[in-house]
Length: 154
Image 1 (cartoon, helix red, strand yellow):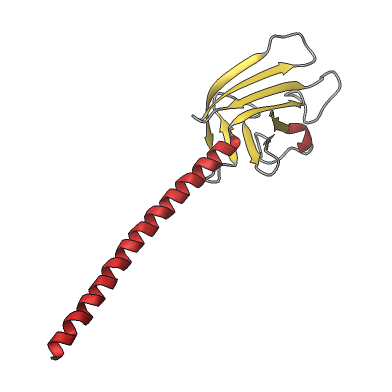
Image 2 (cartoon, one colour):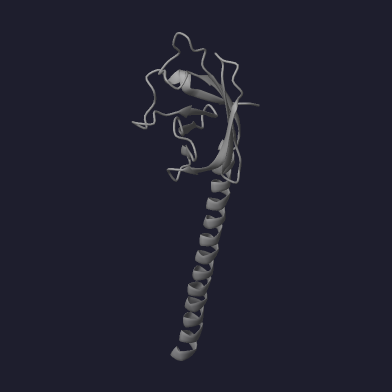
């Protein structure tokens, strides 16, 4: 009689053990899917068209004799970009640059544009949906950081 009681108890224990492992595998799969969706949302956040007027390359703020540089930046989902720079104080033709970009952090906030020697590091502000151009030497904000903002074009 004891053997008859043990068989259902053991069977029930095995069923619970098997169902727990299946649930764990499902949970892990759901967590991976959630992480993938979250990464796609993060990636899509910075994609877009940004514009601003920054000080000339030789200035850390707007300076006499230079009206600034119009910056037009398009960031694409395939991690490529197109950057158009137009000096406002001269009739020179706009400079158009393109290439690949890469993120310097996993949160996809710090971005660097390849093929550009100056003002190629940017930080993304998710709250305001804009980029700030960072100092090439220090990697920090310029003293007059509000003059180095690229706002998203809607």
